[in-house]
Length: 314
Ligand code: 5GP
Ligand code: MN
Image (cartoon, rainbow, N blue to C red):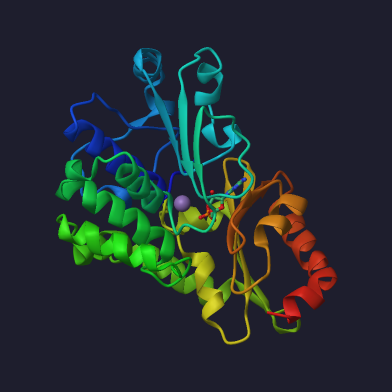
């Protein structure tokens, strides 16, 4: 659900490589994705399961293999899960989230790797198919790496990330175009919504090195919200000196969806799993709650004191 730049980039990249190698391949995502992910270098267009169940089911039914990319829990599959239970096609899981909850026939799972896109490159190299990475596949994979590392600013401590980025550039990836597409592709309304969040909707808790931002459905309407408009908002409080834990709350389809980010050792995925039915990476995770917004915020505020020591260590 809610595929991000790495989910789309790694999928389109692998898809392109498989097609170049002579296979028939298709990309299916559970639900719609933000407009700014429309150009990641590949001509292929992911099929959105929620909008095209019958066609997607037909493709899944005909497939000889299914690649699960950038997720490791069937809960993240949305409605696709129901149909997948009826097929016994071999699954190849390629992912970098902790604690895989899927029993795949082939599993390439490594939390140290920057992105699923980087793992796809590793996989393609391992199976001796590098020659099939053309400019489109290279762009899509580099876009996945850039999206998940914030342009190499986090989760980018391995030498191999840079080697692979270099190899992808050699094969035709256009770093500047990817950056423009991912980071400088927003509407004026989105910029104003960001301004509003930072000036009016950010609460800072200096004693807990924490800050949070929240938005209600009413506010989203006022700013003509489109999916993806609030992508990245959760990162802004982390650029305040001394803030090492950030949370972003947003009302979506009757639930409150939360994004968590941290700098350093604070495990946002554990926090999210324990209190907000979620998970993800240590420094980037998400969750959700059925509590009304005010109660969700109150719960978050009330939890901070018990993490004071851990947050203070950051
Ligand atoms: P984002 O905050 O960008 O939506 O998500 C950040 C990370 O947390 C992603 O890697 C995503 O897979 C994970 N994540 C987001 N929401 C959830 C959730 O509700 N449950 C779980 N398990 N992971 C989530
Ligand atoms: Mn990822």
